[in-house]
Every structure is written in structure tokens, then in C-alpha cells.
Image (spheres, rainbow, N blue to C red):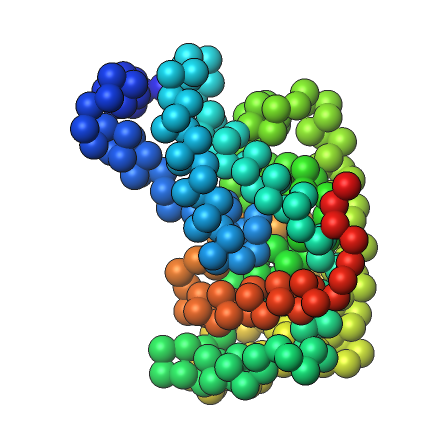
Length: 269
């Protein structure tokens, strides 16, 4: 931990006015991005971040500096997100397809957002959106491990510490999660090729004005492992939170969540 961060932690522990806010403010964008991608819902993500910050503030005296402050804070947020997901239904791997055929989904609003002057489409952002949707079909612990390791770039050691497990358990979760993602994306992209699913890259891009269709669709072909690696590289770099299609994807996350809530699937055990 840097000397400056040490000083900020000490000031926050001492109860100095504004010290905790100053300590966590630089970390907020990363915390918000993690919760957003983990929960696949803007309001749920905002609630999770606020809950985690409250817990961190109340438990600051327990922070001993054995891990980096960022790691400690992420461990709190990760637990909040996992608890939130376990209290809800896990999404179907093809949740976006079900949203496409849901008569209650806001299809007109999606089209309006695509064609708005400040809207449009960006395939790389949509691939990141799709990754979060499919990740909601995984056990929350696997989804957290994948997001921390593959998207946010934590080492196995750091990710395991954040998740509160051994490195061997983390590796098992990563392996299981990758295999599930490979199967899901193979099936989902097969649906796109067969039916032209409008909640996927090609259909959405075609609905946007030519000047706001974004970059060409990247090639994600190949065997499952190589395709997933290319997909993950795109997800890491995509600006899902603030890019060209950010408002579109906030709308779509809500739409898919609403469709899944109506599906009546069993909750996590």
C-alpha cells in the first residue's frame, strides 16, 4: 500500500471529516464497473456499491493492512454482489433470446435508442453486454472469479483473496466457468446465425443509422477456447459503462432482467 493510501486509511480510521470519501473516491469507477458487469443491472449495481461502501465504512477498524485496501474493498463488494445474486433467479444462458420474443419487453424503446442522435451501436460494447448476460447464468462464485481474473486483471492470488478461497478453489471455479461460457456462447451464436436474433450484434447494428453503427463486427470464430479468449480480450477493453451504446445497454439489461424475473425459474440454493 502506498504511503499516501496509508495516510488516508489512518485518517479515515481516526474519523476525520471527509477522509473516507477521499479514500474511496478514486476507486469508485472501478467498483461501479465491477458491480455493473457482475449484476447486469444499473440500479442493482448502484445499490450494491452503496451497500459495500457502508459496510467498509462501518468495518474500517477491522482493516489491518494485510492486503491492499483496494483488495479488501473489492472483497466486500464481491460478497455483496454474490449475496444479491444468490437471492435471485439465475438467468437462462439464452436470456437475450427470450427477451427478443417477450411481448412485454420494450422493443420500441430499444429501436428508438439505437436511432437516437446521441445513440447508436458499438459491437465491442455489445459483446461485453452479452458476456455479462451469459455470466448471470453461472453460479455467482464462478462469475465473480471470471470477472476478477479475466476482465479486471487480478492475479490468481489476489482474486482468491478477494473471493475468500484458496487458489486451487479459484482455479476450479475459473475452469468450470470457462467451460460453461464456451458452451453458452456456442449455442447463443448458433441462434444468431439461424434466426438473426435482434438482441444480438448483427440485428442491432443493422437497426442503427449507418453513421452510428460503430466498428465492424469482430471475428469470434474458431474452437471454443480460442473464441472465448478473443471474446474476453474485447470485454476487457470495451467501455460498457460509458461508451457510445451505454444507454442502450442499460435499457437492455433492464429488459432482460424483467423477462427473466417473469420466467419463474428456481432461485439459487
